[in-house]
Image (tube, rainbow, N blue to C red; front, side, top):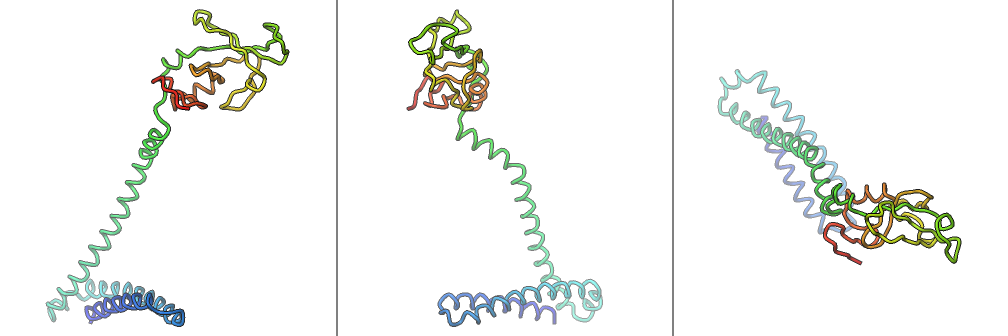
Length: 224
């Protein structure tokens, strides 16, 4: 009885598939029939699950008597249950493996994609080779035609870098968008772009290029 029920359930699933193929060719007039078929398909799946649990209970409780009276029917039911258990356990294990793989490999994938998109960062030795300047107002150092001009004075004179005069509209860091204050330390890249020391150091450790012109401080390539 139970194997016949399983056969009718599988036949019902096949009929549902045929109905789905037919509903693709149908018009809007049979929308009610389509919804009915969907509901019957859900009901069929529910009955199939209940029938499977009932068959499992029958095999466990009355298996010895069934094996004695109808051994062929018993082994047929066992084969049905074995296939169902195998596919159920396989699907559960597959979902668990996919979840574990995503949890373990997702951070590595993120790091790989970030390094591929952002690029390689600069080392501390490369960053220390960048000239360091100290920003000062023009009226406290030199006399310019306009009192609003600012100037950046180099800290380490052995670098032999000329003083950099900055107009008011250029006296700000393009990374944090903050105005330069008197006495703040700046880094001057070879592309003549200047930034706060703390801002550009954090940037260069992630990406060894100028934030404005993409000048590579490691290779010396300038991309405009």
